[in-house]
Length: 215
Image 1 (tube, helix red, strand yellow):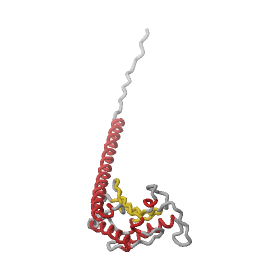
Image 2 (cartoon, rainbow, N blue to C red):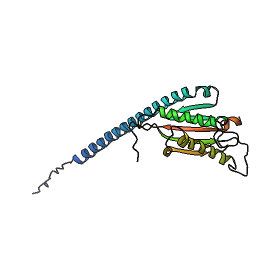
Image 3 (cartoon, rainbow, N blue to C red):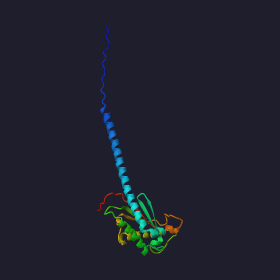
Image 4 (cartoon, helix red, strand yellow):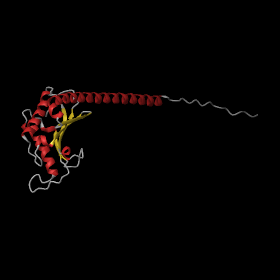
């Protein structure tokens, strides 16, 4: 007499919790990432808006102060994002080949410093950085006395401007956020040599909404 083999049912319990926890963790990380991106982009947009607002106010005040010089082509300015670039022609600040400021050059820079003073926001940082750049034409300048060449001349002129703005003006600027650069004839803006001999002041406006902490 033969008997059929007994069969046993295999019952397997599937644990879904690890997969659920992984999915929930991924969702949480995704939403945290979205929140982080939104917060940072909102903060960056707000800072840019503040900087551009300050730039616009400064530009309007600059245009009022230097209307005559702008109309005469002695002073020019261009704006982009939070940067304002002010250009002074050589003849209004220096004599040809010299790096000492003319009396009228000192008066112009004093008026520029006064524009900063009129826009002071009671300790709130108006700008992040000011760069003073000196430029020459491409005529070689080789002399036996300082400045010996166009590199030294462009740098010396930029330094003279910075020193007057920070030490000589009636309303001096702080020098800890200023720098000077001399480019000789390496960054021409025109085929006209007169236009290439210039000083450029680049102002990077701050987007800080509160007063800057001072050490």
